[in-house]
Length: 305
Image (tube, rainbow, N blue to C red; front, side, top):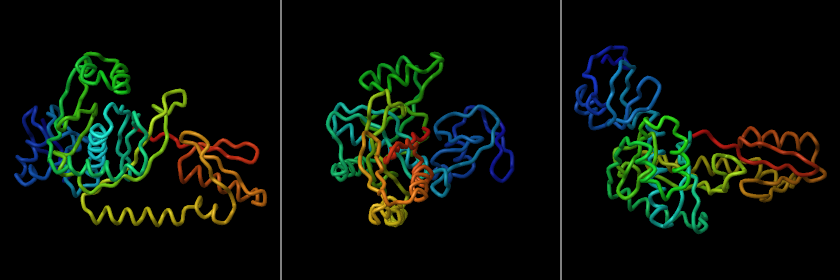
């Protein structure tokens, strides 16, 4: 097979070689640094064999794409910690985001932000174990057996239309998740993280489905990057129009329901300011807004997985 490298050069490799093997053949140092590969426009697990001509790029910590992989792996690390602390917890989706990750869960007992230190401590404990993160491809039938106690995973597996098509799973120690990947080589790479907030949501974003808890977090390759990001978040919060609006008495925010907030405007607030505030919420927070009488109800739009 012929691979087109980032510098435009084309090199031939044996069919079936993995990105790890290719990186090692190109340079032993790359074999030690590779996190995953970019095959055409898609991130690709370093242990998954290649069998066709493509554009090929090796992804290391220095590449922007590595941030997504790191945060996706941190979502799994958090899920593993939650499975230890909350036996019987159910897992929905746990994707990476542009600034971090989230995981949707249904816990047998409530999870609050006060629980974050204990969850983070368990995550650090698992990270220090340097558990290998291993990818496997299995049949949908095998997956149904593995995830028989995970309601939402089973629903996802049942939706696989081609029953002859394999699904991929990733395992680290006693935790296995249904996932396309790719992921970090082992849990020791995932150490500079912080859990950020909670939100209510619905399974697959449908209000007719079960209510879940969404836990947000972020992870970086260095402690300085994490510290800088937390500082930026704090600065954002200080300039948040919702905080300023409440302090100025323009409107009042109150919880309306799972994942919903009611905005009650001060009668003296101008129509223009009301319009401006709701539109700002729509744009800045990616929300759907339902207006009626003196109140505005907004609910977060579900991000794509």
